[in-house]
Amino acid sequence: MIIFELIGVLLVADFLSGLFHWLEDAYGREDWPITGRLVTTPNILHHHEPRHFTRNGWFESSWLLLCLGLVVLGVAWVCGWLTWEAWLVVILGINANQIHKWAHMKKVPAAVVTLQRLGIILSFPHHAQHHLPPYN
Image (tube, rainbow, N blue to C red; front, side, top):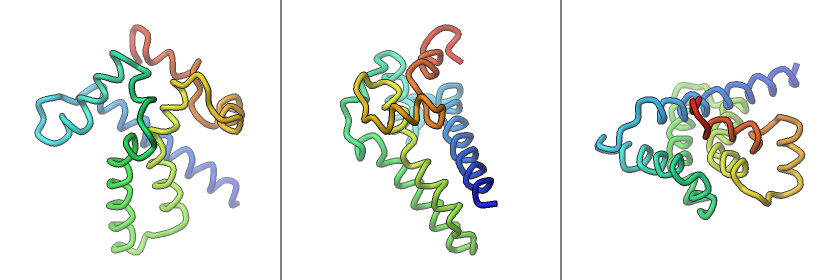
């Protein structure tokens, strides 16, 4: 049963990170008061210069996701939903930008290459389709 729960948690984290990236691409606007500067502007820069964000360290790439993850964990705790599944979804979600960054990097750790080849995390060939017309 635990294997199915792990797979479910991975799928939820993958779906949520994909959903938020799609929302950024489809609806984000640079002139929005908070998300424009923090989310949309870097996202647009990334689409014009895909490898630009690979120069950033983990914290610089993930600090906003870390803040959101802490909020989610706080809400889960208050609501009595703070389970290992909630922790794992948040941990994976916080690292979504790092996983995305690895899909743009020429050199990544061997373990990452293995996970990419197995289709567990985003690979360069799979993600490259997103940066080519029709950009979906």
